[in-house]
Image (cartoon, rainbow, N blue to C red; front, side, top):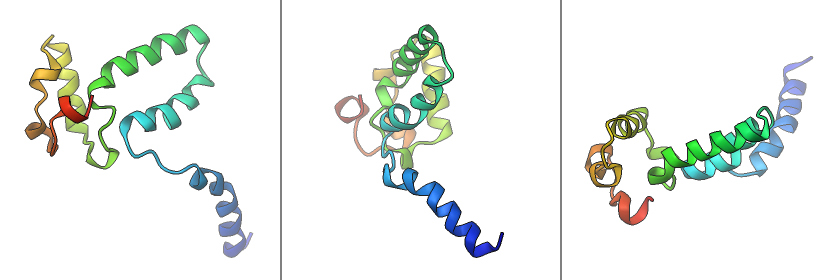
Length: 107
């Protein structure tokens, strides 16, 4: 296959994904991209359990823009939850580079 034809076929394959738009927040990514893929693999009981768990962990940062999300932020959130601390009170925007308070705009 020549390179021009390969690029044309690749564009045809990717076109539906491009038309769906991009998820701009963590919550929309999880709901629109991630969970639909996993639901195909999971039994219904597993899907319910895992979706509840995911939504519980991500509740406070679900509206956070993906472009601002860093691995360190997610790990800090999980560490806070593991220690039993109140994440809403202790997860300060200054720690993760947010401009607005998570409690007023990201939860």
